[in-house]
Image 1 (cartoon, rainbow, N blue to C red):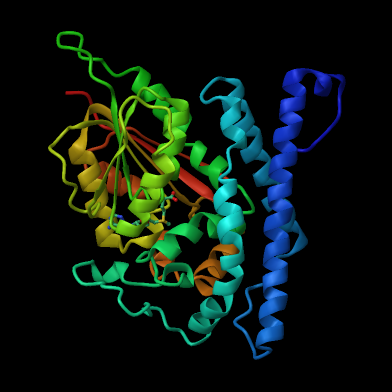
Image 2 (image 1 turned 30 degrees about the vertical axis):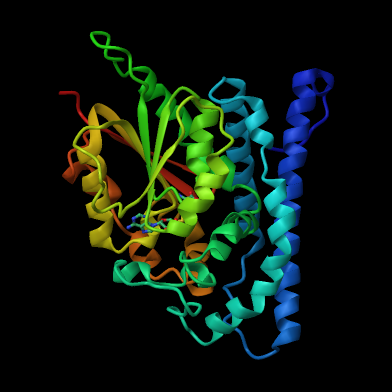
Length: 367
Ligand SMILES: C[S@@+](CC[C@H](N)C(=O)[O-])C[C@H]1O[C@@H](n2cnc3c(N)ncnc32)[C@H](O)[C@@H]1O
């Protein structure tokens, strides 16, 4: 989405678009600058040989920029089309940014130490990992305490923001248009008192996708599950100010065994979960999503791109598990989620890509 000044730029809408482009560009610059400075900082701190990522050639960098441009164009267009208000494009948790950004720097040497010494199950004293699936007890992304502490939950969104140069929200927002379109076609129980539509976000983390769903559809009743109590506490904090008559219901649960009766939700969603699951757990979560989604309902997934869609990004995808601790990513990028969704009972499955993300819109047949 390149910035070009035309007479239209001077209309209120043109100025809003320019402001959005500038906002996103400053996030990109910030993300690049942070990554460059942190590399220099770590080199100064510990000049030993590092596991350097494969360098990216200029064509690849250009391809990345062009995909970011396409993503931001789609984001603006969906706002123009009324999928969500334009004000949603500018939302940023500035309080958290100023509070936790310095902690990112304090945490960096610990991350570096764990990464260099390949300590992938290293948690602070007092953290209890009993009862969690073994695959989950990891320092994903070399994060201090994995998903097990409030400190990790407080820094998570900032870390993702830096990693994706400010495109995490635009990538997550790409689930909203198909979700809204499918929900608008669901019958609203005309024979009994009208009930709000219910949407479940599986592995809701700190509540990002639920917040975005609320911005697009404030009338929808929101549910979220996650295995991490700390991330759910953060989600609760983040969702406490949303405009909704019904507070979001957040429950600690494994996506592989959802604590809901069959066919309870008009729609289910999940963002950035599947690449962090082993293959069998991926299928279990999909089976559960199929079970709790009503006939005629939809399951919308957003996760990392896969090899089959973007072979040209193979070097990037190979860098990812090498630089960040992502033990199931290599298996994920070759996994056929369409086959898994169909095995679980979803029939029509549509897929599409934006920037580093892939989306699956899976429909459960009407009864
Ligand atoms: C990469 S984060 C994504 C969080 C959020 N969906 C987002 O878009 O920011 C992965 C999340 O999945 C959760 N998680 C991983 N395995 C899970 C499982 N089996 N059941 C429920 N949550 C799980 C983690 O606790 C974490 O919050």
